Image (cartoon, rainbow, N blue to C red; front, side, top):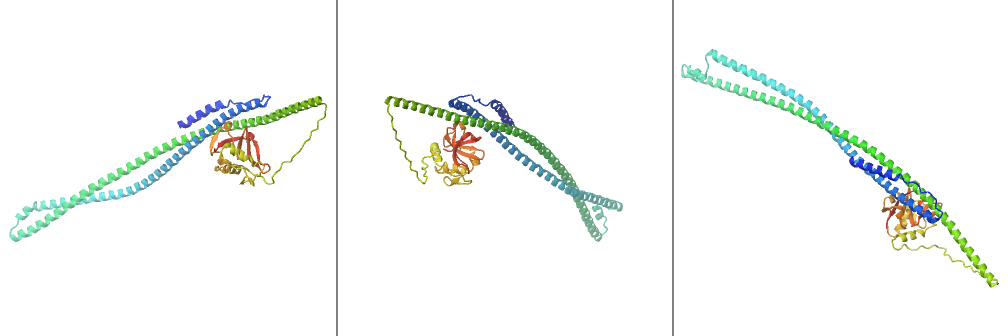
Length: 421
Protein backbone atom coordinates (compact mmCIF):
# COMPACT_ATOMS: atom_id res chain seq x y z
CA UNK A 1 0.00 0.00 0.00
CA UNK A 2 2.66 2.50 0.96
CA UNK A 3 4.66 1.61 -2.12
CA UNK A 4 1.70 2.25 -4.42
CA UNK A 5 0.97 5.62 -2.78
CA UNK A 6 4.63 6.60 -3.18
CA UNK A 7 4.45 5.83 -6.90
CA UNK A 8 1.28 7.88 -7.19
CA UNK A 9 2.97 10.88 -5.51
CA UNK A 10 5.99 10.69 -7.80
CA UNK A 11 3.77 10.56 -10.87
CA UNK A 12 1.76 13.53 -9.65
CA UNK A 13 4.91 15.64 -9.28
CA UNK A 14 6.18 14.49 -12.67
CA UNK A 15 2.98 15.38 -14.48
CA UNK A 16 2.82 18.82 -12.86
CA UNK A 17 6.36 19.42 -14.10
CA UNK A 18 5.92 18.04 -17.60
CA UNK A 19 2.46 19.49 -18.23
CA UNK A 20 4.06 22.93 -18.46
CA UNK A 21 5.74 22.01 -21.77
CA UNK A 22 4.29 24.03 -24.64
CA UNK A 23 4.78 24.07 -28.36
CA UNK A 24 7.78 25.99 -29.60
CA UNK A 25 6.61 28.89 -31.79
CA UNK A 26 7.88 28.85 -35.36
CA UNK A 27 9.50 32.22 -35.89
CA UNK A 28 12.83 31.32 -37.56
CA UNK A 29 13.64 32.56 -41.03
CA UNK A 30 16.48 30.12 -41.83
CA UNK A 31 16.86 26.37 -41.81
CA UNK A 32 19.50 26.64 -39.06
CA UNK A 33 17.05 28.47 -36.79
CA UNK A 34 14.40 25.86 -37.52
CA UNK A 35 16.84 23.08 -36.63
CA UNK A 36 17.55 24.75 -33.28
CA UNK A 37 13.84 24.90 -32.57
CA UNK A 38 13.56 21.24 -33.54
CA UNK A 39 16.40 20.35 -31.17
CA UNK A 40 14.66 22.15 -28.28
CA UNK A 41 11.40 20.38 -29.06
CA UNK A 42 13.17 17.03 -29.23
CA UNK A 43 14.61 17.68 -25.76
CA UNK A 44 11.10 18.34 -24.49
CA UNK A 45 9.93 15.19 -26.24
CA UNK A 46 12.69 13.22 -24.51
CA UNK A 47 11.52 14.50 -21.11
CA UNK A 48 7.93 13.59 -21.96
CA UNK A 49 9.08 10.16 -23.13
CA UNK A 50 10.87 9.61 -19.81
CA UNK A 51 7.75 10.71 -17.91
CA UNK A 52 5.60 8.44 -20.08
CA UNK A 53 7.94 5.49 -19.45
CA UNK A 54 7.88 6.19 -15.70
CA UNK A 55 4.09 6.41 -15.68
CA UNK A 56 3.81 3.19 -17.69
CA UNK A 57 6.29 1.42 -15.40
CA UNK A 58 4.42 2.69 -12.34
CA UNK A 59 1.11 1.51 -13.75
CA UNK A 60 2.64 -1.91 -14.44
CA UNK A 61 4.09 -2.07 -10.93
CA UNK A 62 0.73 -1.17 -9.39
CA UNK A 63 -0.96 -3.76 -11.63
CA UNK A 64 1.58 -6.39 -10.52
CA UNK A 65 1.02 -5.54 -6.85
CA UNK A 66 -2.74 -5.66 -7.40
CA UNK A 67 -2.38 -9.04 -9.09
CA UNK A 68 -0.31 -10.30 -6.16
CA UNK A 69 -2.96 -9.03 -3.74
CA UNK A 70 -5.64 -10.67 -5.85
CA UNK A 71 -3.80 -13.96 -5.45
CA UNK A 72 -3.75 -13.42 -1.68
CA UNK A 73 -7.50 -12.75 -1.80
CA UNK A 74 -8.00 -15.99 -3.73
CA UNK A 75 -5.85 -17.90 -1.23
CA UNK A 76 -7.77 -16.40 1.71
CA UNK A 77 -11.06 -17.21 -0.01
CA UNK A 78 -9.89 -20.78 -0.49
CA UNK A 79 -8.92 -20.98 3.19
CA UNK A 80 -12.28 -19.54 4.20
CA UNK A 81 -14.15 -21.98 1.98
CA UNK A 82 -12.09 -24.80 3.45
CA UNK A 83 -12.76 -23.59 6.97
CA UNK A 84 -16.50 -23.35 6.33
CA UNK A 85 -16.36 -26.90 5.01
CA UNK A 86 -14.49 -27.95 8.17
CA UNK A 87 -17.09 -26.25 10.34
CA UNK A 88 -19.84 -28.06 8.46
CA UNK A 89 -17.97 -31.33 8.98
CA UNK A 90 -17.48 -30.59 12.68
CA UNK A 91 -21.17 -29.80 13.02
CA UNK A 92 -21.95 -33.21 11.52
CA UNK A 93 -19.49 -34.79 13.92
CA UNK A 94 -21.10 -32.90 16.81
CA UNK A 95 -24.47 -34.32 15.78
CA UNK A 96 -22.92 -37.81 15.69
CA UNK A 97 -21.26 -37.25 19.05
CA UNK A 98 -24.48 -36.04 20.59
CA UNK A 99 -26.12 -39.24 19.43
CA UNK A 100 -23.27 -41.21 20.99
CA UNK A 101 -23.61 -39.17 24.16
CA UNK A 102 -27.28 -40.11 24.30
CA UNK A 103 -26.24 -43.77 24.07
CA UNK A 104 -23.59 -43.20 26.73
CA UNK A 105 -26.14 -41.48 28.96
CA UNK A 106 -28.48 -44.43 28.52
CA UNK A 107 -25.67 -46.83 29.46
CA UNK A 108 -24.86 -44.68 32.45
CA UNK A 109 -28.48 -44.68 33.55
CA UNK A 110 -28.61 -48.46 33.11
CA UNK A 111 -25.43 -48.90 35.15
CA UNK A 112 -26.84 -46.71 37.87
CA UNK A 113 -30.05 -48.74 37.90
CA UNK A 114 -28.00 -51.93 38.14
CA UNK A 115 -26.07 -50.41 41.03
CA UNK A 116 -29.32 -49.67 42.81
CA UNK A 117 -30.53 -53.23 42.18
CA UNK A 118 -27.36 -54.80 43.58
CA UNK A 119 -27.47 -52.51 46.53
CA UNK A 120 -31.03 -53.47 47.29
CA UNK A 121 -30.20 -57.19 46.94
CA UNK A 122 -27.26 -56.88 49.33
CA UNK A 123 -29.44 -55.03 51.79
CA UNK A 124 -32.00 -57.81 51.55
CA UNK A 125 -29.31 -60.46 52.15
CA UNK A 126 -28.00 -58.71 55.23
CA UNK A 127 -31.50 -58.22 56.58
CA UNK A 128 -32.32 -61.91 56.03
CA UNK A 129 -29.16 -63.10 57.73
CA UNK A 130 -29.79 -60.77 60.64
CA UNK A 131 -33.38 -61.88 61.06
CA UNK A 132 -32.33 -65.58 60.99
CA UNK A 133 -29.51 -64.98 63.44
CA UNK A 134 -26.88 -65.86 60.84
CA UNK A 135 -24.96 -62.67 61.25
CA UNK A 136 -21.51 -64.11 60.47
CA UNK A 137 -20.03 -67.14 58.75
CA UNK A 138 -18.28 -68.24 62.02
CA UNK A 139 -21.54 -68.20 63.94
CA UNK A 140 -23.10 -70.43 61.30
CA UNK A 141 -20.31 -72.97 61.62
CA UNK A 142 -20.30 -72.84 65.44
CA UNK A 143 -23.96 -73.68 65.54
CA UNK A 144 -23.34 -77.14 64.02
CA UNK A 145 -24.58 -80.06 66.22
CA UNK A 146 -22.52 -82.79 64.53
CA UNK A 147 -19.71 -83.34 62.13
CA UNK A 148 -22.16 -84.00 59.32
CA UNK A 149 -24.04 -80.86 60.23
CA UNK A 150 -20.76 -78.97 60.34
CA UNK A 151 -19.83 -80.23 56.88
CA UNK A 152 -23.22 -79.22 55.51
CA UNK A 153 -23.01 -75.80 57.11
CA UNK A 154 -19.42 -75.33 55.85
CA UNK A 155 -20.57 -76.01 52.29
CA UNK A 156 -23.42 -73.59 52.84
CA UNK A 157 -21.03 -70.94 54.17
CA UNK A 158 -18.69 -71.47 51.21
CA UNK A 159 -21.57 -71.03 48.77
CA UNK A 160 -22.79 -68.01 50.67
CA UNK A 161 -19.29 -66.50 50.67
CA UNK A 162 -18.87 -67.08 46.93
CA UNK A 163 -22.24 -65.50 46.22
CA UNK A 164 -21.45 -62.43 48.32
CA UNK A 165 -18.01 -62.15 46.69
CA UNK A 166 -19.49 -62.23 43.20
CA UNK A 167 -22.12 -59.72 44.16
CA UNK A 168 -19.47 -57.43 45.59
CA UNK A 169 -17.29 -57.69 42.49
CA UNK A 170 -20.29 -56.97 40.29
CA UNK A 171 -21.09 -53.96 42.43
CA UNK A 172 -17.53 -52.61 42.17
CA UNK A 173 -17.51 -53.21 38.39
CA UNK A 174 -20.74 -51.34 37.95
CA UNK A 175 -19.42 -48.48 40.04
CA UNK A 176 -16.28 -48.24 37.87
CA UNK A 177 -18.32 -48.50 34.67
CA UNK A 178 -20.59 -45.76 35.89
CA UNK A 179 -17.62 -43.46 36.66
CA UNK A 180 -16.00 -44.19 33.27
CA UNK A 181 -19.18 -43.36 31.37
CA UNK A 182 -19.55 -40.13 33.29
CA UNK A 183 -15.97 -38.99 32.56
CA UNK A 184 -16.30 -39.97 28.90
CA UNK A 185 -19.54 -38.03 28.64
CA UNK A 186 -18.03 -34.88 30.13
CA UNK A 187 -14.80 -35.09 28.06
CA UNK A 188 -16.55 -35.57 24.75
CA UNK A 189 -18.95 -32.75 25.42
CA UNK A 190 -16.12 -30.37 26.44
CA UNK A 191 -14.00 -31.29 23.40
CA UNK A 192 -16.83 -30.64 20.99
CA UNK A 193 -17.61 -27.27 22.52
CA UNK A 194 -13.92 -26.23 22.40
CA UNK A 195 -13.51 -27.28 18.76
CA UNK A 196 -16.60 -25.41 17.70
CA UNK A 197 -15.46 -22.24 19.50
CA UNK A 198 -11.98 -22.38 17.97
CA UNK A 199 -13.37 -22.79 14.45
CA UNK A 200 -15.72 -19.87 14.94
CA UNK A 201 -12.81 -17.64 16.06
CA UNK A 202 -10.69 -18.73 13.08
CA UNK A 203 -13.54 -18.01 10.69
CA UNK A 204 -13.98 -14.53 12.15
CA UNK A 205 -10.24 -13.79 11.77
CA UNK A 206 -10.16 -15.00 8.16
CA UNK A 207 -13.21 -12.94 7.27
CA UNK A 208 -11.58 -9.85 8.78
CA UNK A 209 -8.37 -10.46 6.78
CA UNK A 210 -10.37 -10.97 3.59
CA UNK A 211 -12.24 -7.69 4.11
CA UNK A 212 -8.91 -5.84 4.60
CA UNK A 213 -7.52 -7.38 1.40
CA UNK A 214 -10.61 -6.32 -0.55
CA UNK A 215 -10.29 -2.72 0.68
CA UNK A 216 -6.61 -2.67 -0.33
CA UNK A 217 -7.49 -4.15 -3.74
CA UNK A 218 -10.04 -1.39 -4.34
CA UNK A 219 -7.41 1.21 -3.39
CA UNK A 220 -5.00 -0.31 -5.92
CA UNK A 221 -7.78 -0.11 -8.52
CA UNK A 222 -7.98 3.67 -7.95
CA UNK A 223 -4.19 4.07 -8.08
CA UNK A 224 -3.98 2.04 -11.26
CA UNK A 225 -6.68 4.11 -12.95
CA UNK A 226 -4.82 7.33 -12.00
CA UNK A 227 -1.47 6.00 -13.23
CA UNK A 228 -2.97 4.90 -16.55
CA UNK A 229 -4.68 8.27 -16.94
CA UNK A 230 -1.34 10.01 -16.42
CA UNK A 231 0.35 7.71 -18.92
CA UNK A 232 -2.40 8.55 -21.43
CA UNK A 233 -1.76 12.28 -20.85
CA UNK A 234 1.96 11.82 -21.57
CA UNK A 235 1.10 9.78 -24.65
CA UNK A 236 -1.04 12.61 -26.01
CA UNK A 237 1.83 15.04 -25.33
CA UNK A 238 4.19 12.73 -27.23
CA UNK A 239 1.82 12.65 -30.19
CA UNK A 240 1.53 16.44 -30.19
CA UNK A 241 5.31 16.90 -29.92
CA UNK A 242 5.92 14.35 -32.67
CA UNK A 243 3.48 16.24 -34.90
CA UNK A 244 5.30 19.51 -34.13
CA UNK A 245 8.66 17.93 -34.97
CA UNK A 246 7.22 16.54 -38.21
CA UNK A 247 5.91 20.01 -39.07
CA UNK A 248 9.36 21.48 -38.38
CA UNK A 249 10.94 18.79 -40.56
CA UNK A 250 8.66 19.83 -43.42
CA UNK A 251 9.53 23.49 -42.90
CA UNK A 252 13.24 22.64 -42.68
CA UNK A 253 12.99 20.65 -45.90
CA UNK A 254 11.15 23.49 -47.67
CA UNK A 255 13.54 26.10 -46.29
CA UNK A 256 16.60 24.06 -47.33
CA UNK A 257 15.13 23.65 -50.82
CA UNK A 258 14.48 27.37 -50.97
CA UNK A 259 18.01 28.17 -49.78
CA UNK A 260 19.50 25.64 -52.23
CA UNK A 261 17.54 27.18 -55.11
CA UNK A 262 18.72 30.65 -54.12
CA UNK A 263 22.31 29.40 -53.92
CA UNK A 264 22.11 27.79 -57.35
CA UNK A 265 20.50 30.92 -58.81
CA UNK A 266 23.33 33.00 -57.38
CA UNK A 267 25.91 30.62 -58.84
CA UNK A 268 24.24 30.72 -62.25
CA UNK A 269 24.10 34.50 -62.16
CA UNK A 270 27.78 34.65 -61.23
CA UNK A 271 28.70 32.25 -64.02
CA UNK A 272 26.66 34.21 -66.53
CA UNK A 273 28.23 37.49 -65.45
CA UNK A 274 31.71 35.99 -65.71
CA UNK A 275 30.94 34.57 -69.15
CA UNK A 276 29.61 37.87 -70.44
CA UNK A 277 32.68 39.64 -69.11
CA UNK A 278 34.98 37.15 -70.85
CA UNK A 279 33.11 37.49 -74.14
CA UNK A 280 33.28 41.24 -73.99
CA UNK A 281 37.01 41.24 -73.38
CA UNK A 282 37.88 38.73 -76.10
CA UNK A 283 35.58 40.20 -78.74
CA UNK A 284 35.20 36.86 -80.35
CA UNK A 285 32.67 34.17 -80.21
CA UNK A 286 33.61 31.04 -78.47
CA UNK A 287 32.20 27.83 -79.59
CA UNK A 288 31.62 25.28 -77.05
CA UNK A 289 31.22 21.73 -77.87
CA UNK A 290 29.36 19.48 -75.68
CA UNK A 291 29.62 15.81 -75.62
CA UNK A 292 27.18 13.57 -74.04
CA UNK A 293 27.78 10.16 -72.84
CA UNK A 294 25.23 7.70 -71.80
CA UNK A 295 26.27 5.79 -68.72
CA UNK A 296 26.05 2.12 -69.14
CA UNK A 297 23.63 0.37 -66.95
CA UNK A 298 23.41 -3.21 -66.12
CA UNK A 299 20.20 -4.98 -66.77
CA UNK A 300 20.56 -6.79 -63.42
CA UNK A 301 20.88 -4.84 -60.19
CA UNK A 302 23.68 -6.00 -57.87
CA UNK A 303 23.96 -5.46 -54.11
CA UNK A 304 27.00 -4.94 -51.93
CA UNK A 305 27.59 -7.49 -49.15
CA UNK A 306 26.66 -6.71 -45.57
CA UNK A 307 30.18 -6.35 -44.15
CA UNK A 308 30.94 -5.63 -40.49
CA UNK A 309 27.98 -5.30 -38.12
CA UNK A 310 28.04 -1.54 -37.43
CA UNK A 311 25.16 0.90 -37.41
CA UNK A 312 26.47 2.79 -40.47
CA UNK A 313 26.95 -0.44 -42.43
CA UNK A 314 23.46 -1.63 -41.52
CA UNK A 315 21.97 1.69 -42.68
CA UNK A 316 24.00 1.67 -45.94
CA UNK A 317 23.13 -1.96 -46.67
CA UNK A 318 19.40 -1.30 -46.14
CA UNK A 319 19.42 1.62 -48.59
CA UNK A 320 20.45 -0.67 -51.48
CA UNK A 321 16.97 -2.17 -51.57
CA UNK A 322 15.01 1.07 -52.01
CA UNK A 323 12.54 0.60 -54.87
CA UNK A 324 12.04 -3.12 -54.28
CA UNK A 325 8.46 -4.32 -53.67
CA UNK A 326 6.43 -4.55 -50.46
CA UNK A 327 4.86 -7.96 -49.82
CA UNK A 328 2.83 -8.57 -46.69
CA UNK A 329 4.40 -11.37 -44.64
CA UNK A 330 7.45 -11.45 -46.88
CA UNK A 331 11.11 -11.39 -45.82
CA UNK A 332 12.87 -11.17 -49.20
CA UNK A 333 14.80 -7.92 -49.66
CA UNK A 334 14.65 -8.35 -53.44
CA UNK A 335 11.36 -10.11 -54.17
CA UNK A 336 9.28 -8.44 -51.46
CA UNK A 337 8.92 -8.01 -47.70
CA UNK A 338 6.82 -6.13 -45.16
CA UNK A 339 8.14 -3.59 -42.62
CA UNK A 340 9.28 -6.04 -39.92
CA UNK A 341 10.41 -8.54 -42.57
CA UNK A 342 12.64 -5.80 -44.01
CA UNK A 343 14.24 -5.04 -40.61
CA UNK A 344 14.54 -8.76 -39.83
CA UNK A 345 16.28 -9.60 -43.14
CA UNK A 346 18.66 -6.60 -43.08
CA UNK A 347 19.86 -7.53 -39.60
CA UNK A 348 19.98 -11.21 -40.51
CA UNK A 349 22.49 -10.36 -43.26
CA UNK A 350 24.82 -9.22 -40.46
CA UNK A 351 24.24 -12.37 -38.39
CA UNK A 352 21.92 -10.61 -35.93
CA UNK A 353 18.50 -12.07 -35.10
CA UNK A 354 15.77 -9.58 -34.20
CA UNK A 355 12.04 -10.19 -33.58
CA UNK A 356 9.86 -10.73 -36.63
CA UNK A 357 7.03 -8.38 -35.64
CA UNK A 358 6.92 -4.66 -34.88
CA UNK A 359 5.09 -5.44 -31.64
CA UNK A 360 7.95 -7.62 -30.41
CA UNK A 361 10.56 -5.14 -31.66
CA UNK A 362 9.02 -2.48 -29.41
CA UNK A 363 10.58 -4.13 -26.33
CA UNK A 364 13.63 -5.89 -27.82
CA UNK A 365 17.25 -4.73 -27.83
CA UNK A 366 18.15 -1.60 -25.87
CA UNK A 367 15.80 1.38 -25.73
CA UNK A 368 17.27 4.83 -26.50
CA UNK A 369 15.80 8.32 -26.74
CA UNK A 370 15.00 9.59 -30.23
CA UNK A 371 17.49 12.46 -30.01
CA UNK A 372 20.19 9.87 -29.26
CA UNK A 373 19.25 7.67 -32.24
CA UNK A 374 22.12 6.54 -34.50
CA UNK A 375 22.18 5.08 -38.02
CA UNK A 376 21.18 1.44 -37.90
CA UNK A 377 18.79 1.84 -34.94
CA UNK A 378 15.23 0.58 -35.36
CA UNK A 379 12.44 3.18 -35.13
CA UNK A 380 9.19 1.59 -33.93
CA UNK A 381 5.71 3.01 -34.46
CA UNK A 382 2.31 1.55 -33.64
CA UNK A 383 2.16 -1.47 -36.00
CA UNK A 384 5.18 -0.36 -38.07
CA UNK A 385 8.98 -0.16 -37.94
CA UNK A 386 11.89 1.32 -39.94
CA UNK A 387 15.70 1.59 -39.97
CA UNK A 388 17.13 4.96 -38.97
CA UNK A 389 19.65 6.62 -41.36
CA UNK A 390 20.50 9.71 -39.31
CA UNK A 391 19.48 13.39 -39.71
CA UNK A 392 15.83 12.48 -39.16
CA UNK A 393 15.69 10.13 -42.16
CA UNK A 394 14.56 6.47 -42.33
CA UNK A 395 14.33 3.66 -44.86
CA UNK A 396 11.40 1.25 -44.58
CA UNK A 397 9.08 -1.11 -46.41
CA UNK A 398 6.16 1.29 -46.55
CA UNK A 399 3.24 -0.16 -48.52
CA UNK A 400 2.32 -2.15 -51.62
CA UNK A 401 1.97 1.11 -53.53
CA UNK A 402 5.37 2.61 -52.61
CA UNK A 403 7.49 -0.44 -51.74
CA UNK A 404 10.79 0.08 -49.90
CA UNK A 405 11.48 3.81 -49.72
CA UNK A 406 13.08 6.67 -47.80
CA UNK A 407 11.12 8.83 -45.36
CA UNK A 408 11.24 11.09 -42.32
CA UNK A 409 11.40 9.48 -38.86
CA UNK A 410 8.77 11.76 -37.35
CA UNK A 411 6.10 11.22 -40.00
CA UNK A 412 4.24 9.20 -37.35
CA UNK A 413 4.23 8.98 -33.54
CA UNK A 414 7.35 7.12 -32.40
CA UNK A 415 6.65 4.58 -29.66
CA UNK A 416 10.31 3.60 -29.10
CA UNK A 417 13.81 3.49 -30.56
CA UNK A 418 15.66 0.15 -30.24
CA UNK A 419 19.38 -0.52 -30.64
CA UNK A 420 20.88 -3.92 -31.49
CA UNK A 421 24.54 -3.04 -32.24
